[in-house]
Image 1 (cartoon, rainbow, N blue to C red):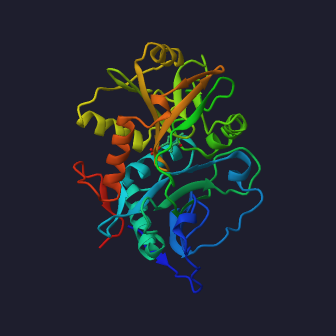
Image 2: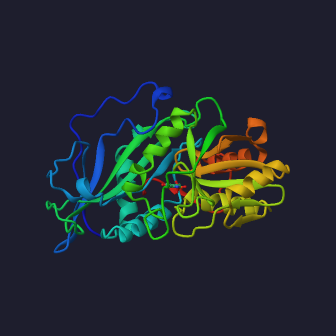
Length: 358
Ligand SMILES: *Cc1c(COP(=O)(O)O)cnc(C)c1O
């Protein structure tokens, strides 16, 4: 394993005093991790240094052509005081799939995890203590060649920054209103929807903004070709609970393989539920609602864990889910996942591990 150089800050920042005001991703810790890559030297110069702005050439490839990917995971301060990560190896495996798709060099997952744990160890006092709070971890990789010609960058940087974040649901798990998007699309098979490419999020802003103006908090994305099959909700995977089965769209190339999604599927199956990964059309959802078969729907992702849907608006027609209340299965999976993450219940699948190496 390569050497990891550590330079500690001489000017530690003031930690946020009021944990109820943390919000999401606005405050960063005292240190950051960086490593450079060039075709000639490979990955080199791994270092943890004081958190600071980057100096970047204006011609850097990532700024012009979006050769940039990211990951998102969390460290949780458990009820027993232990700091845990949830399936972090999955994030670094997925980061490499993203790198591969965007012509960025891959990173050895064990090395990335080792560097992350060192960074968390150094900044562990930044992990908030209040119920529902955590430390959001943002690894990202981007090309910095100074050349305004479209090409895969030779010089690449991999970084990790950390942000203490508040409880996602300040006032309990509130069902949200969802606008079914018919015009804009997020991703198409053959594109980059299955990876966390930075550009995927830039292109989704407009639909999100317009839905917001209509009073909806997220959009439900349909497939890019027929505008018919459900794909994701906002930047989350999506589940629909019917009478006799729980359905989530199959990973067919334009959907991101969420770690919360795969964990949700596994936990629901372990509980004896029938969970099916298949194509699911918006018409089938409307039909199931009409004949009373549609019970619940929710989104899944690291940031919110589980986000219940209270209403769907499709072509002006409003579908209320479970009377606008959180459903039984939605609540179960939320309690189960957060229980494992904060060490409140037994982690039967061995999904968590210490965030600090001993
Ligand atoms: C990150 C992400 C998810 C959720 O993935 P998790 O690993 O569960 O956090 C779902 N959809 C999109 C588009 C994403 O970017």
